[in-house]
Length: 77
Figure 1 (tube, rainbow, N blue to C red):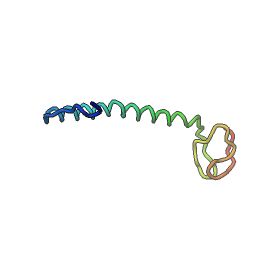
Figure 2 (figure 1 turned 180 degrees about the vertical axis):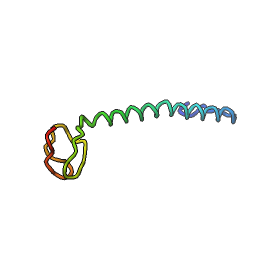
Figure 3 (figure 1 turned 120 degrees about the vertical axis):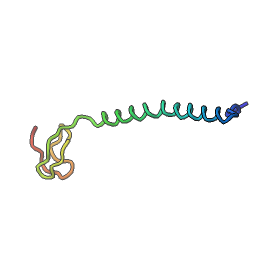
Figure 4 (figure 1 turned 90 degrees about the vertical axis):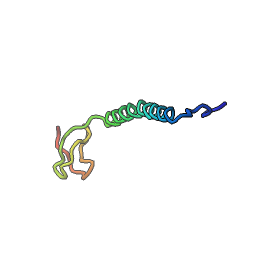
């Protein structure tokens, strides 16, 4: 006896097993995606919405002195 030795024989049993299998995947996949998205969002660290006077880029690091896109000196917060 090994993996896959027992399987539903009737059509109704196969359909029911398929539905339960898909629900099981959903129970694992959906929370994993939500948790992963929150971890990525929180890993970005703090950002300040100071706009660069040269290229108008926003969300620079709090200790940034120059724009990370164009190199223009940023105004003090």
